[in-house]
Length: 255
Image (cartoon, rainbow, N blue to C red):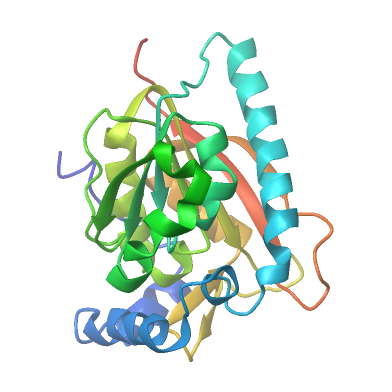
């Protein structure tokens, strides 16, 4: 068990970065991000998207297309993804749940560390509210998804706030939270392929944008296999690249 839970840094540079940032055990790292969201995020689509609410329709459209492709791939190999229950990780007010996940899954549970945003979710879900499951007020570094409950765990624009080690630990807990055939989806900003850095810190909100190789190292460390990856298209040139990753456990449970 201890060997399975071990964590190996991607590079000497990432190890040095986190050693410097986490001298207090992560209190300042996570505290700064928490305070940023308290002070800078109205409970609106524009608020949870950091002032980029205009990207919502294109984001949802391409996520839906990506998920359709994943479903077809999994069906083709005889491991269809169920449509019963999904967990929306870092859900905010439930934007992704209302506009996407509730149209795919019967029930969507929301996990969000900011109670003010989470409490706005039932009203925001509006006509999709019948699909709303449990509201879980917890951070991704601490949340433990119920074991064997979810057909999908969808995590979008939030893992930038996790340390590399906590990102791996969170994904390992997600693996245990999946039903047979279940998938984890990560949709996140990544660095340009021309950028030679492993990660870049945003000083304002204590977040990191990672390189593609670092993201894939983290998935591998967590015991996940990449099934499909796609970039978000029709994206503003002033914005960071966004990639979608569909992941399944390396040791897939039998149906």
